[in-house]
Amino acid sequence: MKSKEYSNGKITIVWKPDICIHSGVCVRTLPKVYKLDERPWIQMENATNEELIDQVSKCPSGALSIKK
Image (cartoon, rainbow, N blue to C red; front, side, top):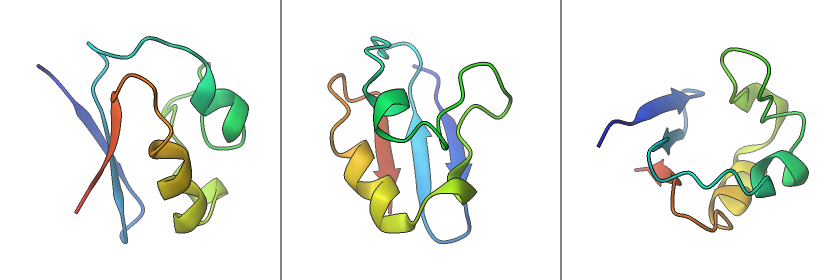
């Protein structure tokens, strides 16, 4: 299973596109971070680490996780 990592130097978000169900939870929760029409589509600099961690914990498919 492939994955892609996005880091801001303090935390790393791991995205597994193969299991992403595109429910829109991430986009609705943090629209300034998750921009489907842009690359990179995860722009971590637009939220605090706490906001990112909280949002990733709500991913319904498990496609997003925090790498420690």
